Amino acid sequence: MASATVRSCKEPSPDLASLQMLGGQGTSAQSCHRDLMKMLNVCRAPESTLISTPVSLRDKKSGGAVVESKQVPLLLPHEWFDVLEKNDVLEMFTAIWRATKNEIREFWQCQNFRENEQLWRSRQFWRDVNVMESLPVPLILPGDHASFSETDSLLIISVRCMITKRSIKTSELLIGCLPKSANAGSWPALWDKICESLTLLASRHKAVVMALVGDLEFFSQEFGWPTANSNNLCPYCKCDNLFKDADAVAPFNDFRASAEWRKQPREPRENDHPLFKVPGINFWSPKLDVLHMLDLGVSSHLYGNLINDILEDHLPGNFAASIGALNSRIQELYESQSTPAAARIPKLSKGNIQSQTGYPCLSHVKGRRIREFSSVAVGLADLYKDTVAGKHRLEAVKAMDEIYELCDCQKYRFDRKEHRSMEKAIDRLLLHYTFLSRDAFNRGKKRYSVTQKFHLMAHFHVQCKWMAPRLAWTYGPESFMSVCKKIAASCDRGMPSYQIPLKICGKFALAYELLLRGWLNLDEDEE
Image (cartoon, rainbow, N blue to C red):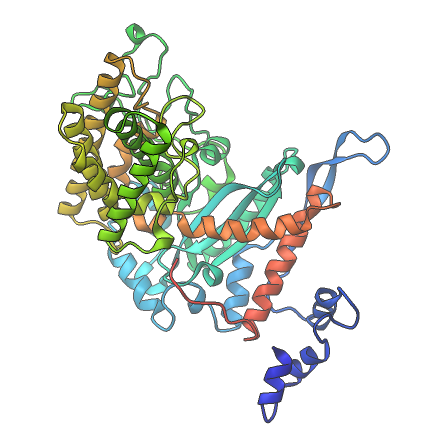
């Protein structure tokens, strides 16, 4: 490409001429990356900050696992901002290019500093910040695990402007990562340095973290959230999940308006995680997101049970014939709604419906496609609504479809009508679903399980009152994780796991260096 550019330009730049001389493989076979790094020895992307921390590695003599202090790299947030600002591309990486300040100003105008519990809890910090003058960039901090080999996963921490409409490829900034196999109490030292950097950004009024997002496992490990099997499984209220129903005082699966847990909220309390010492971050900063709570949780259960009900109750007989007929009807509904092929769920098989617990659950389907399935699910449920259970099933999927429509709202904050609609739709969904669960139990059917995510769903509208769900969803960060995963997989063979982060940070910084030089023009599609 550099060669073609040089030939088409009358006066090519010296950089492009040097790049052309490398050829397709560099100065020798399989050395293009090495020669490229030599040529880019003056890097304008931030340099990795090396942090000494204990890591797990394999001892060469004994072959067993040992813990030693090694250096793990981080790309610190304040250094990202400094280098992007220095190269006049900070706006490109935040909100709409050339209109960033207007977008950020509109975001802060929507905030209610008196009633929003998250802002009020950090009121000491906000009193010293004139947001309409300094216009700090609102950030979202995703953290999640991604499997990059058959035996190992990678915890990836990144940061992104909350209101950006830029592609993930140009707006998500890597902070750090570490394979699970290398973790030996490694993260406290890394978190301390990350939080020091975030505090520096907040104290300069350049950027503030407004949301922490990830799956429930990440929240449990980092912020002390109760797990799904806990006796008290909610961070927001004192509901219980006891083995004996007779001992239950506030059952987590009671979604009536008079449910006991609604009268027993928990007092907000942060654990000792360093993030909670960063200005602006507090108990209310971790956000429930559409992908992990709905697509890969409540929706998967609802749609899995819908499909299972149709197969077992309305299309009895040979399973292969029944699933074939159902797949045909699903495709007809997709065609009638002009849904693009990329947004459709694949042809279903038994493995997509039955989970390991024995309860139906739609699995092995991308979360984004499950969200797009909601309108088709309404059409399916409408075809089989003749029974009492069928009517409740239809109302449940209608409520879910309405929730998804509200989640797709482009606003920064719901108005009162939209918030009330969200609250009512969630209540309808949970009430109809629990009826179906109770009905299946009475009929001796193993269907419609109620999990922790259903209860958290009941609290979701509180978060939506002050922040539209779209601002905190994680479709983009999941795509970003897949990029980091591919880099990690390419470094996996023969390399100690604690050294993989250095390779990932190096290649990531290289990509941004090429971007800053104008040699890399990534697409600008919305994520």
